Structures are given as structure tokens and as C-alpha cells.
Image: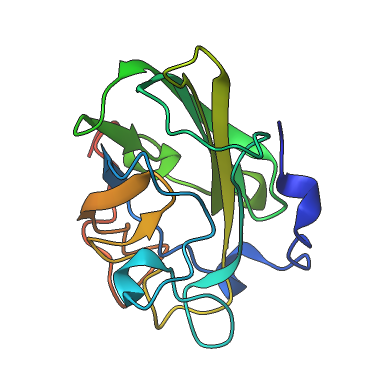
Length: 193
């Protein structure tokens, strides 16, 4: 399931006119497997701030196919896609056999390379999680987040943000050459200084 076609891609721009304030690393916590999405509850930590003056331009969360929802007992596979500003895949990371309470780490392309072209500029994320409920039925949740690459004054995520079954538990700052307001070192860790 690839959701990127549901969002409108960003207009073409020059690399120097855009920013990428997405974290260089994210530690995710698998939590709240009983929660369906979108999480429209009174606790603001369950919702990302989307649109307008926020670092997230748009978000879609699809709760799966079952009308008689039962939470998964575990997640057999989670696939995370890092997307560029046109919402095309620039990296993919796969995690298997996760239980509620497990953590797993995402590493951005910006951590190991210096981004010099728009086709490598981080512009969003997509995650698909698959598991089975107590009756052996497949349960799926998928979400996509499009970042606001024209807005360099807000970070897209804060620790504790949640989308469905996922909590953003630790965030490493973006690279300063992509996000001057919040970034750290310009040199990616995988690039010789």
C-alpha cells in the first residue's frame, strides 16, 4: 500500500529555497495497539499539528480493512519509507517481529550523506504496519506525513507525538545546512570531514 498519491506533491523549487527540518534519526516506540487512526481525541499529543504554520504540511492515516476491529497481538512487519519533496522513496527501512513497548530506530539519508539535490531532500515519511489479531486476522495500519519544506521555523515533530500505534520517543536534530533554525553539525556522520 503506497499512500503518496493521496497527497499533493510540493511545487518544484531550488534546493537553496527549501529546508528539511525533519530529524536525522527517530526512535519510534510501538504503543497503543488498541488505538485506531486518525487519533482525534482531546489529548493534543495524539495529533500532529498539520498545515498552516506547522512543520507538517499534510497527514493521512488509514486504519486498515476490518470493520470489526481487534488490535494486533504483535507487529509482524513495519516498513518505513523516507520520501523526498515529490513524495518519492529515497530510503526504506524494515523492522520485523515487534511487540507493544518495543522501540526501533529510523536513520535519515541526511545522517550519512550531504544532500545536494532535490531528489534526495527529505519531504515526508510513510509507514505501513502489519500484524495479526487474536483470531488470526491480518490487521494493517498505514500513514504518510508530508513535511512543509518551505517553512524553516517549526520542527515537524516533538517527542511524544503519536500517529496511530507509533510514538515518536526520541528525535535527533536535523542537519543545520538543511534547517538552520534547529539543526546541528553540517557534516553527516558517514561523510569524512
